[in-house]
Length: 412
Image (tube, rainbow, N blue to C red; front, side):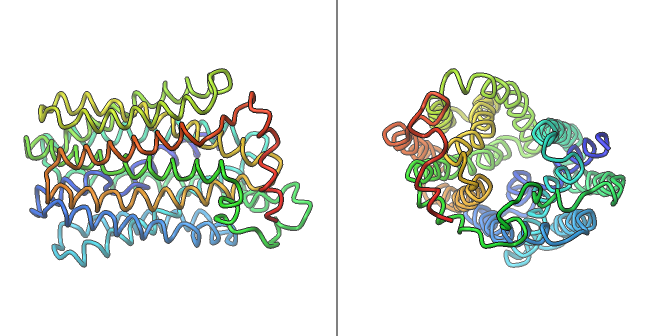
């Protein structure tokens, strides 16, 4: 069973993101779109994915056909992306990529639910860590294959790689026996003493967030982080493609692999030192590195420089991925609002990330790539200033927040 989950996370790593940053390169180099249109279509697709998140989670909670949903989603994502070379209008491209993003919203809650339903709550944390490890390995492997193959066959190869990974993910999904999943555990119903786990009313995620000032400040900071970060890699991919059209996809793959290689040790370091160093200085470092990254890109168009600067993405993303659940857990400890708070913040940050591509694209059209990168750097710097000035420390040495913010207890 463990190997089936390993394979599922490995092969879904490429499928769950669809074309990802390769979409921008394909539309720029093959279909000759301008940067503003590229940014807008990516934002439309991202917003479709965000809108589907809550319904997808509710569907996963209610259905016992979790494997079938993942198979259907993998097929839908792949079909939508394979249709791209056959269509050229903005409306059709936006529609297919929106479909892919909406279908992909199934994967995260479904994999988490299936994992919980198989291993149970006691082994869940360790298994989720292993899931993430195989997810990163899958991303790095897919990027390496795409980079090498695109050098020989051109950007079209990313479509066939996606199809191959989708087929493998379907096989991995079906290799998990249906009766191995405890669907009650998969909904998190064990130990639900107040009836809420059986469908009782839950507070609105945004009501929870607004009830706790530190949680709201953290949410705003993460929104600014994603608004600044989301557009940087696609913009770098476009610059690399403009420098060398034939190597654009390959160099994008190098950027992804480089960031993934940095991300893993950074995340491990954060996990080990977050209690000793404190949450606030570590997350402040992530925002500072992000601002520095945006300021460094405009200094040169040399591919080696751009790829080198992209290594900093591994630092920021590694910190964010490891620290985000820790801070939310600190602020919601003992309140029963951990998951609803994570969901509310994830939705808000998703909106920030979706708008990032459109805003950056239009800045590029009007003022160039350097202006776009510096604007994104300024947004990260603003997030850093807000976080340093207003966010309290939430770690074990912050007795005021120990046990969760009292305001959250009154939201039920």
